[in-house]
Structure formats: C-alpha cells, structure tokens
Image (cartoon, rainbow, N blue to C red; front, side, top):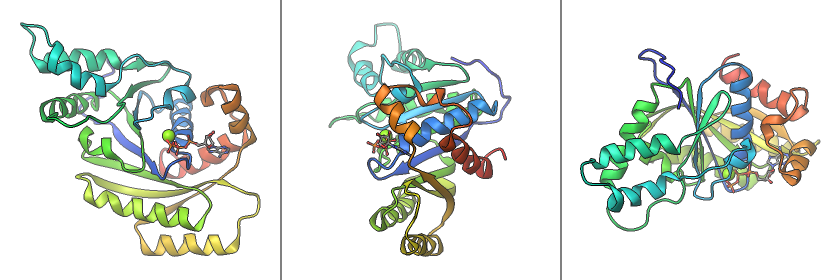
Length: 262
Ligand SMILES: Nc1ncnc2c1ncn2[C@@H]1O[C@H](COP(=O)(O)OP(=O)(O)OP(=O)(O)O)[C@@H](O)[C@H]1O
Ligand SMILES: [Mg+2]
C-alpha cells in the first residue's frame, strides 16, 4: 500500500453512478487512466459493484473481496487479536497495487445478520486510507448500496452516466436525486451521456437540457461509441493501454479536465 504522506489533506472522492450497462466501469477506468497520466496520484480505485469487473479493465487480478473479510472477521479472528486489528491487516492485504493507483474490491453486499461492527471498522479504515491517496474513485452500481457503508461523507464529484435515450436521461436524473437519501454530501453532480451515435437527435438534446434545468446535474459531455473500446473488450485488453491519441481518450480527458485538474 502507498505510504505517501499527503499531510493532513484528505483524498478527494469521485464516484460513478448510473443505470446498469451505461458505461460506469468503462468511464471509471478511463478516469483512472486520466488521473495517472496527469500525475494526480496516488489514486485508490474502489470497485463497489457486487458484480465486480473494474479490475479486468485495469488489467489486474483480485484475490480478496472486502465482503468476504466481513464474514471471516466473525469466525476467523485468532485469539489475541482484536476484530479491528484483523480487519485492518486484511483490508490492507486486499489492496491490489498498480502503477500510480491501487484497487480495492467490495464484492457482494452482506447477507442477513449483523455487520454493524465490520462496517464501522471498514469506515474507520477508509478514513485512514483517505489520508494516503490524492483521489478515491468509487465505481458504483445503480443503487449505490456500498457507498453509504464506505462512510466517505463527502463526494467531490458524482459522475452520473446515461445512455443516449430518453429513459436513460430520466433515470440519470432520478439517480442524481437518490443521493439525497444517502448520508453523504455531494458537491457536484455531472451528467455524462455515453455511447452516443454520430448524429444525436435534437429531441434528446432538448430533453437533456430540461433535465439539467430541473435537477442539480450539470452537463459534462457526450462520449461517442468507440471502436477501440469495443475491440479492447473483445480482446480483453486493459483500457489503461489505450493510446493517448484515441478519440475516446481525448474526449474523456477533455471532460475530466473541465471538472478536475484543468
Ligand atoms: N463509449 C463506448 N463505446 C463502446 N463501447 C462502450 C462504451 N462505453 C461502454 N461500452 C461497452 O458497454 C458495455 C457496458 O459498459 P460498462 O461495463 O462500463 O457499464 P457499467 O455501467 O459499468 O455496467 P454495470 O451496470 O453492469 O456495472 C461494455 O461492454 C463496454 O465495453
Ligand atoms: Mg460496472
């Protein structure tokens, strides 16, 4: 794990949300690539989707899910060790290290039973981790179930990803409103419309304008359908390896520049 001391500065938290299959994980990987390329490191990537696959797009393999540790803590904490010590050691071991960033995978949310203690230890460990990274990026599932457990308190930017459809942008608006129910302050909410065709219908553009007016979402940009992403997925090549001059890399960098370091 990174031992970088960023003083008392805490990591800025970025999060991806959006309905299933809209491109949250793809854009998470492109955002990590962006931060690493810009030297905005170290970054902690958190895969908070039960059906975790961010690691594949980053070219990493994962051995331990945090979800498992919560169960193991209950039965496997050896005598002489507190549950807190056990969680701290194993959460740190579960962090996968890469160049410029680390990855931690939440896995399946817990089943029935009491996980209050495990969750409270997890949130304390996250608090500690927040001191060691410049950015924390959380790739969520639509419901953002893990987000409240991570106890991140403040999200600097929530990117809400939509597909280019009327129902898609309406769902994005609903997801943006859903954060009010989470115990987390969201500073900026940014709509990204992904997988757009060459010619976007005027009607859809108008609908997006309406959503922007009616919610606290700001418009981030359009990300076109990318042949390179399509090919990369089939060849199982990590998105981190996409050349910097690829259209989708340039376009997403332009969007992230406006909201992050630019
Ligand atoms: N701009 C794009 N161009 C081409 N293909 C894309 C683009 N964005 C995403 N995809 C493809 O769309 C599919 C879904 O993307 P992704 O897995 O990132 O979505 P997701 O929102 O994370 O899905 P889930 O809700 O299942 O976690 C993947 O096969 C991905 O390669
Ligand atoms: Mg995903």
